[in-house]
Length: 194
Image (cartoon, rainbow, N blue to C red):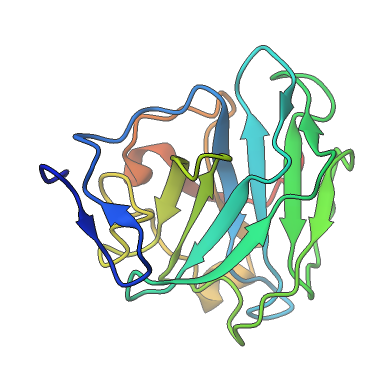
């Protein structure tokens, strides 16, 4: 929910300037695994180009949010990263944590990340993607307190029980974006790059 005029937060970012989040027509956070059978750093983030045109996402930011709603890690997408149009090889960028144990079907765009936080992507945190103008394109939050990443209701967080099931939070096969994380994401078998 937006506030008229916006309010600057502690990081100097303006909050509340948008009346409502907009459904992304370019890049979405398509799948996130905050933990896995190799522990808390067995994680990944998958971005997907949902447009019908190739998209250069060089310089885009992937922000990792704490359960308290603070950005504590920002990953800048390297120069030369171009996502192919939807439904083509190269449509994904997969960011993998240091203990990632899965397989990546489409390995066109893979970016290993080493997050400074001991937990990596917090199970009760969130992830957002921002374009070159720092506009938030999409996000997912795993608790109600992560309002900067969450769209609508929070997605169901992963747990020790989901580790053994090799689960992640993922969108449906169409990458549907209704701006309600509980509707858009469900716990499913990990499927990085597919």
